[in-house]
Length: 310
Image (cartoon, rainbow, N blue to C red; front, side, top):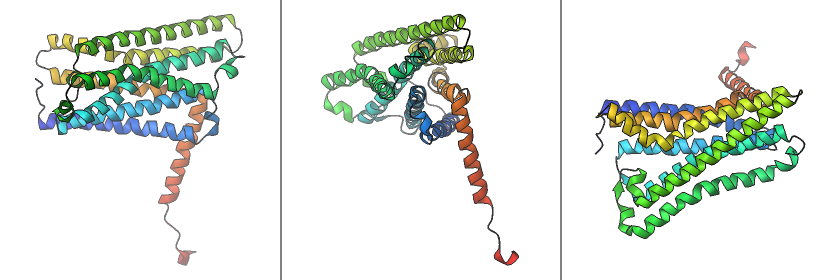
């Protein structure tokens, strides 16, 4: 059984989570607006994949924060609503690593096969890749819903439960299936990042020109690797909880809150840094957007001149 927090502790935790969500929502919203206001980004696959990841992370963060707050307000929620929230959270969480792998492949083609990049990485193919990302990340967990519908009575979906996966998708086989797919996703993304990084490294050493582009691409993939490592913490978080409970017995609520911040919140700070700050082209348009908004605010706050004083 979970020990309920005191009112003060629950208020502080929810305040922290909601404030972080507001800050990240503002940052992500600014990036999305910057992207859609400049035509130059519409035709570049790297920025299309980037903004897809930003929107995906924004949805993931909103859903997980909503579940976090609801768990304190109602403690238990309807199983049907819980299924919807859990599936969206799982889809978007799995999308991020696969999207990182796609972005790394795009950088590999741009640096190692620059002449073929315009033919391989088209806008249409980028949209197809995004569709494939959603399919391969959603298909395995859709089966969880089908198995639950087949094994549980319809009255189960009218009950109220603490909204975690173990309470909704209860068949033990599903847990083994999730572990198997987690290993497959992790292996694919990890090998993709290692392969693309090493190939770009070799090309950068072989070429005497355009070393700066190769250096930036290598650094970007390294940051993708750091983000991937943080995203993959969700796969080992249950084992980490067990270890920390052995070290700090009786602190399960605090351990799970810290685990939530580190696994689900912290990795979402890296996406704005990788492209919103580091990327020269995007940074230039982002500054223009922020300056334009600042000037608009100043104009609106200036009081109108009195005609009698003119």
